[in-house]
Image 1: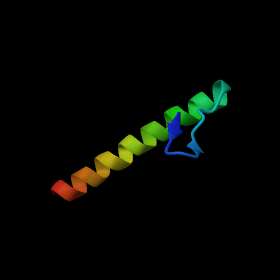
Image 2: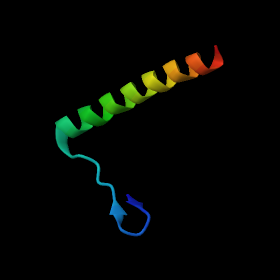
Image 3: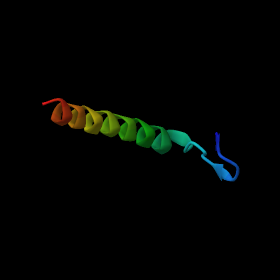
Length: 41
C-alpha cells in the first residue's frame, strides 16, 4: 500500500504480524470509544 510519493506501508507477514495487526486494531477501537465517551459526556 502506497501513501504519498515515497512512503510505502507493508503489512507484517506471518502469524505474529497478523496477531499484532489484530491487537493494534482492538486497542485503537477501545481508545477511540473511551475518547468519544469523554467528549460526549
